[in-house]
Amino acid sequence: MNKIKKYDPFWGVDSFRRDMDRLFDSFFGNWPGEEYKGFWAPAVDVEETKDSIYVRVEIPGMKKEDIKIQAAGDTLVISGERRHSSEEKDRHFHRVERAYGKFQRALQLPVEVQSDKAKATYKDGILEVSFPKSEKAKAREIEIDVK
Image 1 (cartoon, helix red, strand yellow):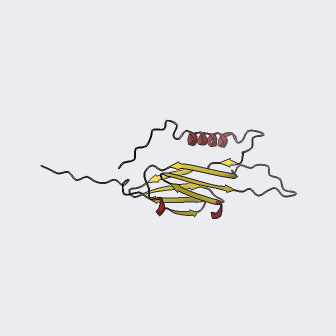
Image 2: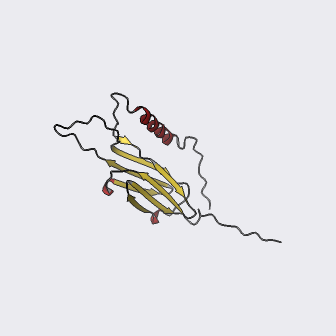
C-alpha cells in the first residue's frame, strides 16, 4: 500500500531561512552586538540511489559521543552540541565565526526506509547516515503482456 504524504505548503521554509541567514552572515558577518543564541544548524545533503538514502551532515570538530541520531518512520533527527573552549586568563578572542552550542536537524526522508538497518559513520567532519530503502519504495520494472 502506498503511503500518501499530506501536502505541506511550508515544507522547506525553515531550512531556506537558515540558508539565507548563513548567506548573509558570510557576506556581512554578525552584526555588532549580535550573539548566537546557542543554537545552530549544520549543512545537510540528502542523496537517493536505486537502493538507499544517504544523509550527510557537516559537523566538524565533534566527538562521536556528542552526536545523537534518531530515526522514526520517515523522519531522521540528528542533534548534538559543539562546545567552545572558554576564555582563559590572558587570552581574548577577537573574532569567533564558528558556530557553537546545541544543534538539531529534523529531516523528512523522501521515501520509506528500513530504519532498523541504518548505518552511521563519521569521518573528516562529515557524519553519513545510510538507510536501505524499503522494498515498497524501490522502483520496479513492470513487464508488458502483449496480446
